[in-house]
Image 1 (cartoon, rainbow, N blue to C red):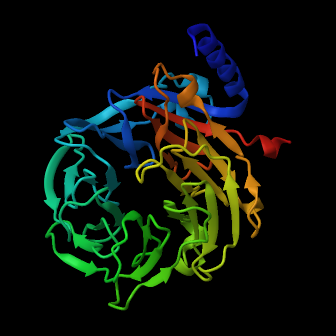
Image 2: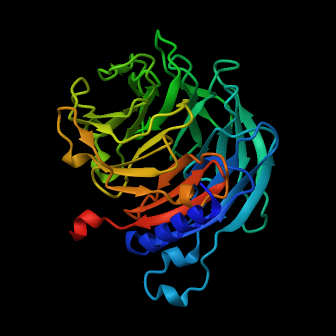
Image 3: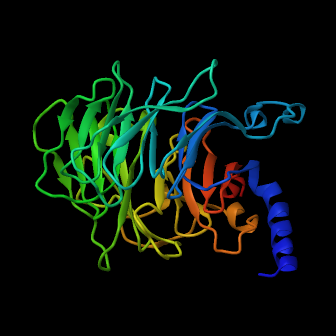
Length: 379
């Protein structure tokens, strides 16, 4: 696309955005990130993934975003770096430990975790304070991490279904180990209750386990899929709808764009499913994200297939497979990019309380926070 045509596209999208966004703010990182993790309702942690030294930053979102009334009177509309530091290697996974000022990272090349202190009012430095050993050595794709609120900080971590363990951060003591006969690479780990978690595999298998018991985990097999060597990504609903773990819904998304929703009470049958409008391209395990909206019932966000973040309303899907069109698409990273290479979204995350607010990051280093307007509700 030549420069005049690019300018026209950007102008058209900007005019369109006046109607389609309630809020839209942009920030530019020196290096792109694959991780966006909330550290509070107004701050997030990001880190680079280049092969050598990278920044790890805690960013405060623009104050104007949170002005409930008279936004025009709030002059501050910029992101602000509140704490920062450097990592010796890439960051492919990052989790904040609830109730603390700690984050835990993994470099995507081994099972070891790095522990970081985010700093406080007396220091703006993010510093490394320790490490956590994994059950296995080097692992392709690295470890997945989950954390829960507890009196003693704990993290769940592992690279494969047979090396998942719960570790106490302060002592490094293993508190629980998942025992399975398979060694399936993991796409994610996620707590759905204080003691119940999902170990989600890239082949579509989902293990449901309870850290209070040594009983074997339940296995939820992958959905039927057309095509070989399909990767699957999984997310479980959270919030008030998931106070009982068995009532949680899980969505599994394949690299061919097939999305299947089921619940933990009846794992073998699809409650609903759809073929998404996803432009399938080079799909690696770290590329794609699918996530339930925590404060908007039935909606999921999908990214990594292209330069857009797509929002879908699963409540209108049926049990039979049909094509689904997105409820909304955020195309801002593509149309505003100055990069000559194709830009793709590297990560996204919903705001934990604001129903239609998301953050997204792209391969050109751009970070956007946006609150989208549901046009279908207006019509």
